[in-house]
Length: 127
Image 1: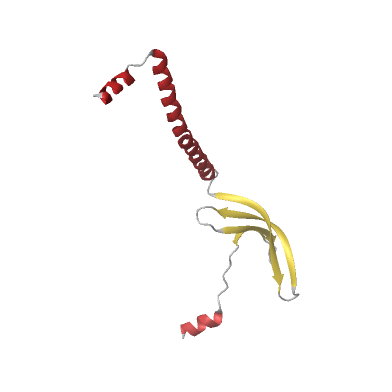
Image 2 (image 1 turned 120 degrees about the vertical axis):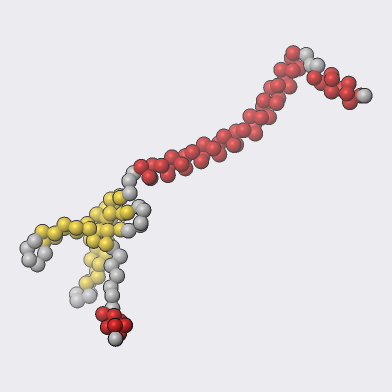
């Protein structure tokens, strides 16, 4: 009986008390929502960054340097080049323009990961 009376009295508050109770409840709810809202904004930022990567295109160009080693002269050379990155496959190619032995101008993209096959191994497997 006492509990019922105190509950009835709690719900029959004056306007000032009711407003204070509502403000306290609102403050509690806001403090609970601020971290959730901040996390949602952080996730939106990550999504925006990913979308920017997708929008930038599949192929991207980069300027950089690469090192080669001349086996005959036993010298190392550092050269500058333009590289093409395929963002879907991860393949990287290097831009080459030169005049070949026959005097023809060649302009092409060469793969950077050249695999050298061992002719002796192929001959052994073929026997």
